[in-house]
Length: 69
Image 1 (cartoon, one colour):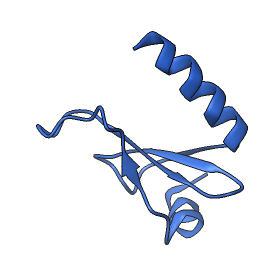
Image 2 (spheres, rainbow, N blue to C red):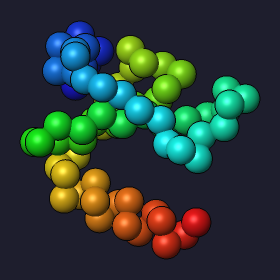
Image 3 (cartoon, rainbow, N blue to C red):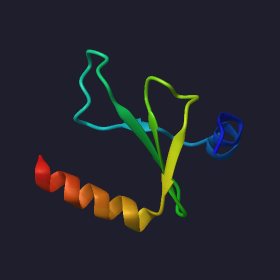
Image 4 (cartoon, helix red, strand yellow):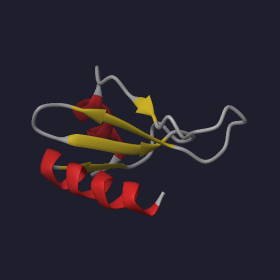
């Protein structure tokens, strides 16, 4: 997906950062969820590439990642 497609697909989404993100401006990702997909992007490059996954894939990822914390 190119950047023009990314901005069209994701316009109007409510992006949020992880509660684990610091306030010092460190490396972060942002996510935006819809009923059909979860979109993930680099918070420092909001016009850059966006990873889009199914809600079930996101749930699986978060479940596995939270076991590592």
